[in-house]
Length: 233
Image (cartoon, rainbow, N blue to C red; front, top):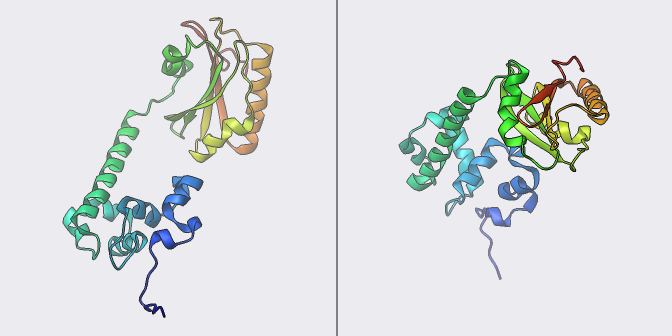
């Protein structure tokens, strides 16, 4: 006869897979997880009496929000029952990396003020590619570059782009606007009829979604063409 304690708490491994933090992250992405679930992954394991999720919940109850958690000393984190110095150090190190990344990203984001700025960001990388690569510079409301999305790779002289592929990451990153970029392996940046048609189609899709396409830059061999400067859009 097995006696089950009324105080028994299942471990994370005993929980259904669809509510385990690590499995959810792998399946749905980190952005789908709550603060508590992300903290639980950082903690890795619980204690004898509590799961990592329980410990993460205790931390959030104790410090109220992530801002207070970032400012907390290792000793304060260790005071939470079940956390201890090792787990507190893990959490503190991860939060400090996030803080440094936030400071670095904000200070180092390029600002696009002209087609020259956009072309300069990608010229050296894209001018020698032997296939057409279609990319998008994702901008915030201040025209700062918050990311460069590699949308598709085509053939020697064409690159097919579907609006779904272009805007998927832009929506996820909350981009305010985009600058389209692709290269011509021939070295001649003159736009083709296909380039013009694709650009118009993507601009219309952007209007529906609410993300403006500011320009389309075609990269050649150390030279480029801006659709905006040429009044093609």
